Each structure stands twice: as C-alpha cells, then as structure tokens.
Image 1 (cartoon, rainbow, N blue to C red):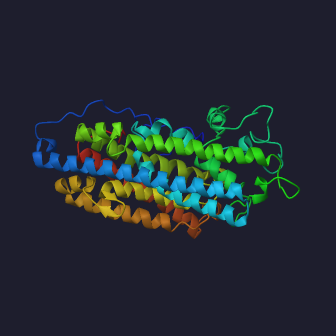
Image 2 (image 1 turned 30 degrees about the horizontal axis):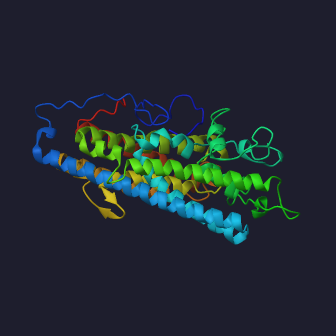
Image 3 (image 1 turned 30 degrees about the vertical axis):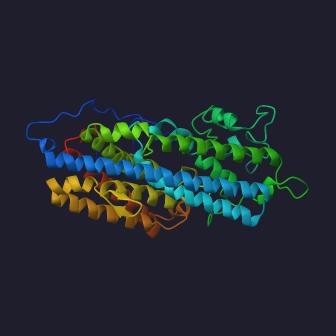
Length: 402
C-alpha cells in the first residue's frame, strides 16, 4: 500500500487483515485446488469465469488507457502554464490534475496482487509527503530540493526518482502528490485548498519565491516521470501486446478471480476504510488526508469505491459486461443482491462526506460531518466482509483470517 503513516497494527475492520506493503501478495496460497463438487468443475460456470476475466482485462486496459490520455493532457496544460504563468493557466493545470486524478482513482483496485502497477506505485502515488523535502514552506523559505542547488545541482527525472523516499518514508519527491503540491502549495486555508501563487514560477521582481527556474524544471521532471511509469503499466495491459494481460487472461481463471477479489478487498478494507479514512478520522490531522493540498480527498475516496464496484459489476467505460457478480449470482443470488445493495450504500455515504475532508475530520463529535465519515468506514467494512463471503463462495483463498 502507498500510505506511509506509522500506525502499528492495521486498523481493525471486523477481521484480522494480514497486510504486506507495496503491492506484495498478502501471503496467498500458490495454487488453486478444485474439489470434486466444486463449481469450477462445471463447464458453464468455468466459461462464465473466463468471460469475466477477459472483461476484467478489457476494463483494466481501458482504465489505464484513459488515465494515461488524461495525464498526457495534464502535461500539455502544465507546459502551457510554464510557457505563460498566470492565474488562468495555473487554474487550467489544476483542473487537468483533478480530471486525471479521478480516472487514476478508479484504477487503484487493480493493485495488491503483484501486477504491473505494484512495482511502481510507490513513486506514483506515495503519501503523505513532507512538503519541505521538495520546496519552501511557511517558515522555511530555503527548504527542499528545489532550494538546494548545492546538494541537487541538476533537476531531472533521474534526480526526482533517486530522491523518492531516499531519507525516509515521508521524503516523497515524485508522483501525483508531488505534482499536487507544486500546483497548489501548502493548504493553509481551513475552508479550501492551497493557493500557491503562479508567480512562484516566474523570474524577476514580481516573483514570489526564489529558484523559479528550478521549480519549473522540477514540475516538468515529475510530470515526465509519472507519464513514463503510467505508460509502462499501460503497455503491460495493452490488448495486443500486453505481456501481463496475456498471462492474466490466458491462465487459470480461478487464480485470476482470486486476484480480482484481492484487489477489491484490500482497497476497500485496509486502504480506504483503514489507512485513508480511519487514520485521519482518529488523528484529526490534515497531514493524514490523502490529497491534502488540493482538498480532493473526498473525490479520491469516491473514485476508489467506484473502481471496486466496476470490477464487481464488470463495468467498462459505463457499459456493463460479465463481472464477478455473474459468478456470485449463479451460486448465491441473495449474496449477490446484498453486495450490490451494499456497493450502492457505500457510494452514497462516501458522497455524503462534506468537503473539504480536512474540515470534516476536525468537526465536533456527533456532527453530521463526523457521522458521515463514521458511516463511510462502517459501509466499507461491511462491504469488505461481503467480498470475503464471495471469496469463500468462489473457493478462493485471500489469507485474511476470520
């Protein structure tokens, strides 16, 4: 997982979650044995599973294709901003970041099973980051890589990637949240996001910070590094030449379904309910929210939950194909109905969290904002329990102990 907060044991969510960091398998069994009375011996069930896995491959490829395209659009707006820094061009770059970020959020369900994303996720989406590791902050005008040409004489992609986590888990130098900080700056407004002046990126007497040239180099390098990693992941899932996709959809469908469920349970349970909501809910600290500079955390949560729903329903770009729901419905129609209803409930309660998220976590006990967050944690917990029921029904081992 990408969250670097030191919390000791995982947040309890009704079952004991056996967690491994940065996308390593959660201690899973190496094989998928099938008993004589298993539904996996039914040719019709197995054919449905193969169709489900194939549609999942289509969905993963579409998700990364769309994210990559939106991130390329983001790069264009960043370049336009650097060419002509101003209020309008900065606003356009920020809007493009939010658009690309929403698409990436729906792909996070494709993590946690040693897929292509897990090898680079730590430099794409790591958080929380120490702002002063990258650039100046209030009270530390000379902080960060940007302000330190003696230690970092050259700023390029190699510099940015080498610095990522080089001095500790919060010394994040690359990825979505580095870009977010470079576009918004520190969030010092309790009612809204950060408001970095566009003049941080200009030279001359109207500049609001030193080292504008290095800041321009830095945001460009982060942008290039993010695109390179997304292109590499996207290529592995490409329909015609994606090596990982060919192995995934051409292998044992039961193993593929196991990985799909692992991504769903891990993202909804430990990651969203635990790391991204409960930690911030309990500490009330702004630094513990996911997209703290742009105040986009509530949208991050909604996008992640939507990704889980997409996999279960087999939804690709708004159209529904065979999903895990089809397998569950053929064996236990009631469980399928309950999980569909719970996915709807989870979406509703997440959407009910008032923005910005940092203000909601700091609201008074018993307030509607705090109650909405608590309801979201519970909804995700119940949803994850149901996904574990699905895993048991489909005879796949997630190694999450009851």
